[in-house]
Amino acid sequence: MQNQGRAAVVVNPTKFTDLGLVRRRVEAACTRNGWSAPMWLETTPEDTGQGQAQQAIEAGVDLVCPLGGDGTVRTVASTMANTGIPVGLLPGGTGNLLARNLDLPVDSLGRALEIALTGRTAAIDSCVLELVRPTSGELAARLRDEEDPAQTIDFRDAVDDRTSEEVREQHRFLVMAGLGFDAEVMAAAPEGLKARMGWLAYLITGLRHLKGPQFTVALKVDGAEPLRRRVRSVMVGNVGRLQGGMELLPDAVADDGAIDAVLLSPEGIVGWAAMTGQLITRQRIGHSRVDHFQAQEIRVVCDKPVEIELDGDTLGTVSAMRVAVDPDSLLVRLPR
Image (cartoon, rainbow, N blue to C red; front, side):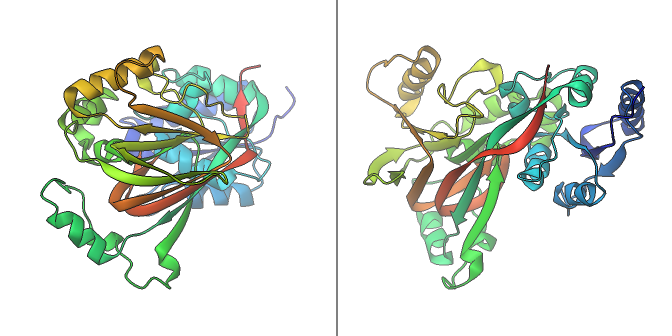
């Protein structure tokens, strides 16, 4: 069989109880499909995939496969963007949201390996996010707010020198960035509960956060005038399907050269029920509680520091964010 090249596997070892067995399965699949022995790179708490992906690039591999959760996929794929080297998605986490949105296997490592090693290469978009960190005064003000539980406030997020480069951070993501409710849920979901119950852990944790505070945002879509909304959550995404098949961003497509956003503004349990019904049926139920937008760039400024998450990874608190699409920037392996 003609040699197909060499793959690198960037694996999060904390996701597997028998890592040796997983490695043997990966090596066997490579041999069976005519690939050289794979480069095996394990992430660490200090380096969650970026350094390993860079090591694979420098080694001249032909394919890089993140094997872990959504966070591992995001970190590895962010490094692989605009390199011309394809990414093969291997399931190993709670959500596997990018794989779900690309109709890739999320419950079979064997089938995912076959697609990564023998599938076709296609280009999808990624999203570049710039966030703005709050000051310690802004965090202290939120902490004093009796209507805001502020359970995840961390003063290490604060940057008081507004001339510092640390005020702004740039990140790349593939699925969604979220401000408010969803980020609070991601931060609060216990690792043990996620290990036992999978994505249902987020549902259980979410029910405990339904009564959390709203915040006001100024939203700017491309070059339009800013809109002001009182919201519980702002989601900006490259794709829109969540676990359980719910289409949070029904018009979001991974390769359409655009980003989609949704503002969620429920009031109490009744509001959450109406909003959920609107998301499921795509029909307005009662008062409007869901606003959808599509653009190449979206800017959000908050009236107080709020939590943020990217593809399930919490990044602390921010006061503003800007998201822009980077079209056709990531090559991925899909079924032939």
